[in-house]
Length: 458
Image (cartoon, rainbow, N blue to C red; front, side, top):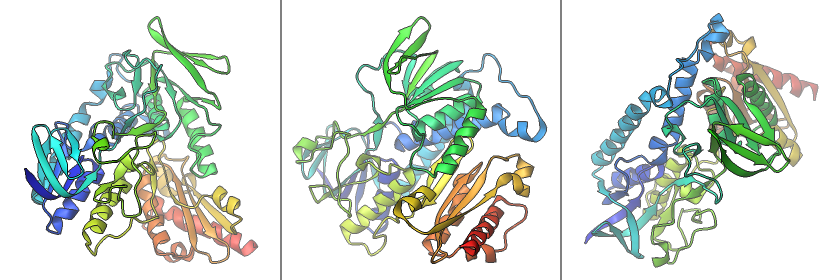
């Protein structure tokens, strides 16, 4: 039986980065991956494929061109989703090869097969058994599939397999208006699909700034997305060539296809955790301490399998910190609390730090400043007129508390604000900075000016 310092189960964002980090510091490491190619959901079913569809939708629909030149672009009538996703396979393969090369460069052994614990210090991988000083569970998550939802029908999908359908549906009901639901609603609507988005909650994306959320909803409605909020769904049944969704309020929604996006569960069901004395919670997640140790201290866990925040970016950092703490490396000792969110709707939303409503709820003295893209030269040039940069600033210290961006490339633009937050900078930083012209980054300066005006009024 081969013995390693660390065996990582799963080669997604958390697993890859943890393995490379431990190997960098001289540990003997193996990664166990049951799929044909490494990368996990981030590469093959979730993050990269959905973002590929988003870019395809923006390009082929002429969404960006319409605001600039009044161009009318129509998709071919026989266009299929697989045709539109032609780049998906190439991108996934390139990323999988990058991961393999990264592991090989660090002398990490890649073991193919399903990993299952035999006892607390032994993992079976097919017919092979491996032992380790420490294990890291980084198996990710999968879409929740509630009983009663007819997933065996080719017309009913979860978020991992929706991109495998052949036809571009004329109509689609999406159940669940979280991040995944809103992202897919925008993508399909941009491609001309009639989209109805249903959620039991009164607001979409309740964790983001209210003003940004409301503006995003307006932009989504312009795309053609119809909202059914504070509406609980009941039975989903096949009807002729389509699907019917009954709402508890009495309405019935009809569409060619249904996409269920309400929740994900940790991939822990077949790991043999009962053989090591671990039990996941009702969502399949493993509980860990600040050092990412489970109840069995030499077994660590990181990434989506431990639940919130379930972001690829955070998962990478969790994996690195977990092994550094476990082996006593004096390197990364914690995951930064300043974690940005990137929501790839149309337009994008990205945010980091406090929201305006959060400050109000805490009774924290604050001011806000906004700069709209339609008042910005670069925004005018690229036709991104609905975008906005919003700053939340402490009224007593002038320190930046939060940054919220709506618009194309928001997920890139937010990092300037993130750096300022981590420096504990005041809003004056953006006043003093000289920005390239024309750029969207310049909106930080004008949002800062508005903050200064609000501070002066106080």
